[in-house]
Amino acid sequence: MAKIKGDIVIDIEKCKGCSVCIPACPQDVIALSANVNSKGYHFAETVNDACTGCANCAIVCPDAVITVYRKKVE
Amino acid sequence: MSQITKEEIRQPENLVYKKTELLTDNPLSYCPGCGHGTAHRVVMEVIDEMGIQEQTIGIAPVGCSVLAYEFMNVDMQQAAHGRAPALATAVKRLMPEKFVFTYQGDGDLAAIGTAETIHACNRGENIVIIFINNGIYGMTGGQMAPTTLPGMKSSTSPYGRDVALMGNPLKITELIAQLPGTLYVTRQAVHTPAAVRRAKRAVRKAFENQKLNKGLSFVEIVSNCNSGWKMTPNQSNEWMVENMFPFYPLGDIKVND
Ligand SMILES: Cc1ncc(C[n+]2csc(CCOP(=O)(O)OP(=O)(O)O)c2C)c(N)n1
Ligand code: SF4
Ligand code: SF4
Ligand code: SF4
Image (tube, rainbow over all chains, first blue to last red; front, top):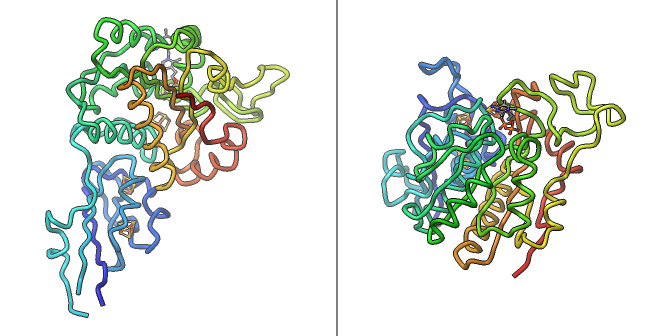
């Protein structure tokens, strides 16, 4: 059965840790890191492999720091 | 199911979303979670998708988005406080082949710039006005604006806006929808994926109207000012849904052809 697998890449240096992407994700893929970037923000990171590449997180990210990929897997 | 690595997914042919090149690489000067950034992106994605980057001139306001020209990768001017619709009028009349838009906050558009807003709308200038309504003067420290809700706290109404003392909030979008010069008037938001998609369709319609020389389109975006409202970004978006949307209902207010 064909399955959709997605992944996101977060530009952690530009992420401001605002958390707006977190409730936007239907798969609960994103959480804030315990680490901080050079500006001192707890940046967003992926915490599981459930991403479907729906792009919801990227569409609400005010700082446009999320890139989204999606691939059909046989 | 066969295993697939992140590297295999992260290939150019699998790309579904990335930041438009019509946003510069400058880090946005906005507070974390502020809707201004999303609103910028919505406008720039529309201009990108219409292929009109070279023909577009934006007018930045005074307010938190005073530096919009640092982030929007199109030709821009920055107007004196509230004067963006007057400047946009001049630019469009001198260069009618250009796509001209203003980007203004509620203090800029609905307080100091009320006259310019109303007259540009009433004249029916062939421009697009993008109006970011966060119910407050964000840049200067969260003072009460004409758009501040009844009972809403701000730095100059710390006990909440008392309408008897401070007057009523101004629904300027409903007001300008009454004017014969306006063609398309709508109110949108950018706090959820669905709202962003709808806002983008509205902005697209506004620029398409200008392309066809149809007249003035006015897109209000109800947005958060989490710093001024003294909330986290997600709390501010919830507060916006509960308090701003009942007073400023989303949707088209006027659609002419
Ligand atoms: C002529 C003039 N009067 C007052 C100011 C001070 N001032 C700067 S920004 C601003 C209000 C901005 O509020 P708004 O338009 O709602 O934008 P926001 O910052 O909330 O995005 C004011 C009053 C100014 N810069 N120039
Ligand atoms: S919405 Fe964007 S800036 Fe905010 S935490 Fe998520 S990735 Fe970072
Ligand atoms: S693309 Fe969709 S599923 Fe993947 S992290 Fe973003 S919101 Fe979640
Ligand atoms: S003060 Fe308010 S409007 Fe200005 S950038 Fe911060 S959150 Fe946005």
